[in-house]
Amino acid sequence: MSPVLRIFLFLVAIFFLFTVIKRVHKGLLGVNYSLVWFLLALVFILAAIFPGLVTWASSLVGIQTPVNFVSFVGIFVILLINLNYASSLSILRKEARRWSQEEAIEKYLKEGEDGRK
Amino acid sequence: MTRALLIIPAYNEEANILGTIQAIEDFRDKVDLDLDYIVVDDGSSDSTLEVCKRAQVPVIHLRKNLGIGGAVQTGYILADRQGYDLAIQFDGDGQHDILSLPDLLRPLLEGQADMTVGSRFVGSSSDFKSTGPRRMGIGILSWAVRLASGLKIYDVTSGYRACKRDLIKHFALDYPTDYPEPESLVTVTKLGFRVQEVGVRMFERQGGQSSITPLKSIYYMVKVSLAILIGGLKAGRKGSK
Image (cartoon, rainbow over all chains, first blue to last red; front, side):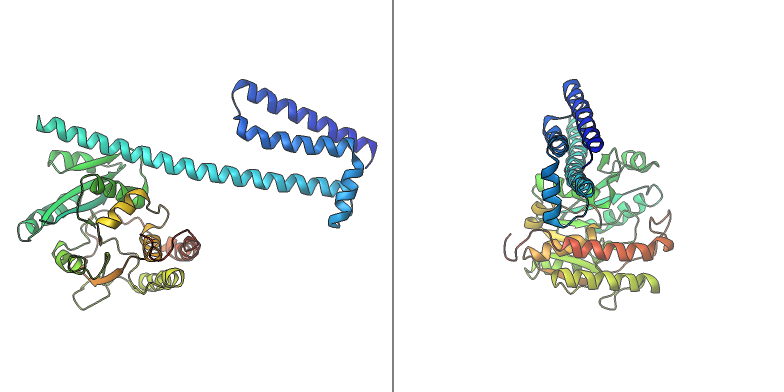
């Protein structure tokens, strides 16, 4: 990996880390979600500091250039993160539906009671 | 006496709902059953809710449209909470014939089935049998349900269905949202419940507008079939209730 690329990776990772920390600090990002992003940033930093690691790993899998390997890992991690979001969203929608139903039933039962008084 | 609840989902049915209710009222006294009904207004944008309230029809108002699955589940939650023995899904648009109700309930009361599905296509009692393309579509969905669960039922899209206590409890906790009619049949069968198809009478749509246009149909059929097959992957062991 060229020195330029390593510096670039390192800077990107640091910037990303900084953005994530700022969001968590402001309460805009839950700690749980932030963990994965930290992991991703860590992978980039490691790749920048220890390019030998990346070369070794990519040859293991059979990918020509280390850069491609880093990209591939990045994309894969993002896919996993998206899957997490899809799951969270599905659960949230189920819950929201439930709240809506419960509220409607409570209101109906209460009106029935009021009507009988 | 056996207590039954008619769950009547309604979305923008201001034109038909009172007619449907009247038919039920006329029928009620003729049958040896403690029959109640509840309209579930699924976030209608018309005056369905007002119409019901003015006529003092019991109605649950969902602020936001949840779809047929969500609306019907609301009815099941109520049925479960109030301890009904039987729950029947009955369309608010007047397409279902209340007079077919005894036929629909008989297998349940006689212990032959845990759930019954009212079909337009079984038996000669049906007048309105729907259009050709629609029937082909239903055939495809029926095949998908059979593949996913082994259940051999033709009219898997019928919203005219009834079930007993065990299933009321189950549906109150868990009811599919996307394509509830066929999906629920798959789930229920895989859990070991017995589903039976019963011939019932259905009418053509009177007033108002159907929410399924012919154009959506083909795309819908393919999409729903896939969803049914994927839904078959969900948890559920035979015999566990």
